[in-house]
Image (cartoon, rainbow, N blue to C red):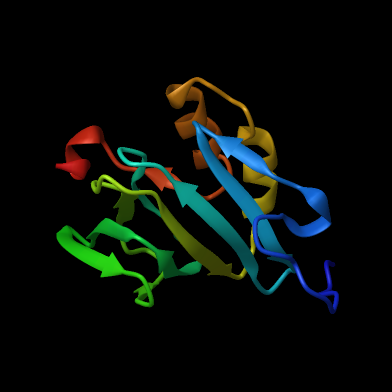
Length: 149
């Protein structure tokens, strides 16, 4: 069981000094506990996470800087700085930085399930097909590429 520790995870840093590089995007864990998992993402123009489903987790995105285009349950929407995106478990979603500026966002999922273990395995992995395969073993299921259209 992982319990929440009091304290502050500073801007631009990860909890316990950890950072993940997942297919070129930087992720910083902010809080890690059984009941929730929070992480910051920094997405350069053109970076994205394809449409996928978390069957056992609710997920949220608080956009902090920039704009994210999201495919949320088959519908394209935009989230701007200050917007909160709610994605109930089982709803297909993906996020894309289609702008010409970087975007930064705070994500969190509840409960954590296998997500921290997944990010540990994906760190510095360069093969997208392997990312999809390992993700499926950790309750994150990517949809076929046409779901991103």
